[in-house]
Amino acid sequence: SQKIEQNSEALNIQEGKTATLTCNYTNYSPAYLQWYRQDPGRGPVFLLLIRENEKEKRKERLKVTFDTTLKQSLFHITASQPADSATYLCALDTDSSASKIIFGSGTRLSIRP
Amino acid sequence: EPEVTQTPSHQVTQMGQEVILRCVPISNHLYFYWYRQILGQKVEFLVSFYNNEISEKSEIFDDQFSVERPDGSNFTLKIRSTKLEDSAMYFCASSLRSGKETQYFGPGTRLLVL
Image (cartoon, rainbow over all chains, first blue to last red; front, top):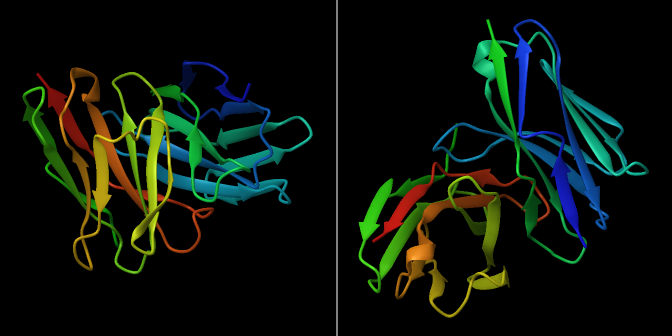
């Protein structure tokens, strides 16, 4: 069956450290993968999109990698700040669909001062 | 920066009543979507809409749901006869080009069915 799994429900790290979140998928062949941030009671906010032919993408303190052999994406936040505390969702397209994206259940990240 | 907007932010209704959730997608976007998120669960796809018709819908999007673009700016989700299990956050999203591009989400409408 098709699955998207994010490594842990919650991750708690010290301010200034690098946070690394994992997204694994099975029985999908996505053309791209996206990472979103979601704050409590709010809608997902787009962060980064990486395509299957890209290994790595960066935006300011954010870095995403995409390994289609391992079927895994890693999301890194360097020099983490308390304001980075949120739930981070990975989402991927489905090869059978023209428009649907499927979300993982998210990892709740807490950055302690 | 352009945003997707949704109204109302909260809606409380009695079981069996009809509700209409409204969205204004980003103005030059062509693809529109509805998703829902039951409290504590994943964001789930409901339906996508392009060129004034449904492109794709999930198994959740049964006959009690419908979508419409009544004018050039609004995009609505109607639930004809609400059930308790329809209680959730409903998110509208839009994308510029094909469905396989970044989707931008609105802030959501929290629907509570009593």
